[in-house]
Image 1 (cartoon, each protein chain N blue to C red):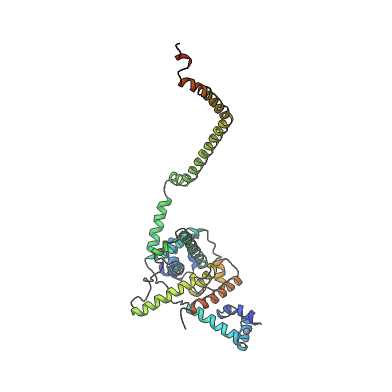
Image 2 (tube, rainbow over the protein chains, first blue to last red):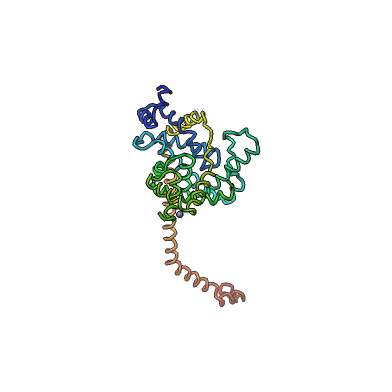
Length: 197
Length: 154
Ligand SMILES: [Zn+2]
């Protein structure tokens, strides 16, 4: 199949092609979403290895699950749900391990240096400020309960609508509204201490 | 609309997620109410502080790594069936054998213990009796003075 033709197809058309046995249709889906999924994992997980692993696992699961996927659901929503579930499971298992080894975190830095990010050749002071800001946002997000955190990540960072978030999180529209509202109130308190606008 | 009703819907209002009619009601209220206007401004600022500009760059080698991983997994799935079965069976089988042995040991101990209790008492009693007969104070006294039956030559 022609790459150009691929690019004009919708996600759902590519899904149908993949289900029909065209492997390259999946490659195109991966090209479309790898950055979004890797960034989504990076919002949740601090270690670069975990981010890579989370994104890879998401696409592996998608690859195997796509055969049974029904095209009436949106592919992106379905993919986000796989990624979010993977990340939340990872966080939960890390928390359990940390509970079992209460001092292990003292010997290991959880900070993601974000060194693989764009704009690394800026002025070092600006870079430091940027790192700090990223870290503050990360801490504020980590302070939110799981459901509020996911709602914020999907809305603010991934640009999903309330309805799309409801589909990813398998909850009602009003639940999304309530989660986001509570999250914003909490963030207002948390971030006010860090940054003055 | 009352203030507490408006405040609950401010996030959705700011995110453009209300219907036109709902949004108009909130907007009317904000025009009249300083408190709610201030609350809306706070929410808007807090959310803006979450910088949405930060994202990981696209990685053109991600696809290559994915394909490599997929074929690695393909090989591990293609392991001989008996190996997969063995791996899945080892833990339950060990547990089952352990449980069985534990039960057998328990039954064995229980039987021995109750056997010792029922027959043991009479055994101990007879042992004590024979000891007393052989080592009674009188017998020991006689033995010490050379008056035991066999040694008496006079
Ligand atoms: Zn008001």
